[in-house]
Amino acid sequence: MDEILRYKRAVIVVIIIIAAIICIVFYFLTLVPPPSYEEKDTTSSNTCMGRGRVII
Image (cartoon, rainbow, N blue to C red; front, side, top):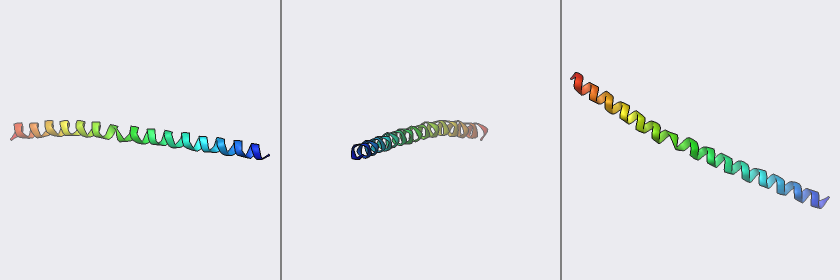
């Protein structure tokens, strides 16, 4: 019985570690896109600024 409990605990620990790694990976994946979006936003804002200058 003790071996089974140890096995279950080991499995639970492994699952928690895998879940933590997946969460970290998804966290970094969600972190990476915003800078690219910000770059797109800055380029669009730059074009908007350019249009504003053209209009002025």
